[in-house]
Image (tube, rainbow, N blue to C red; front, side, top):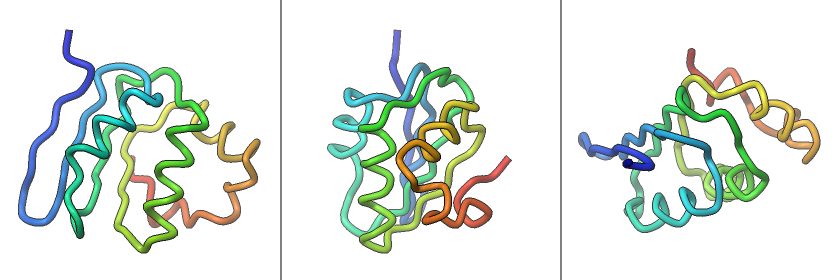
Length: 97
């Protein structure tokens, strides 16, 4: 079973998670993500998002990298709130439905 699918288009890495967003996925995305690429992340199949995944996304955002997230699970917002990032991130700019 594949843990994620990915493709590249122009200056963008498109990743579709096939299961939860955790440290293992972060490591794989880090290997794939090239300097200057945007990350478009489809989380439709993810039921769980851990703090390591949120920290990874936050590090990209603080380095002014473009991140777009589609279909995040409810837990995504809960983890953001717990970490105090729900007000720091411009979710209208980042999250697409």
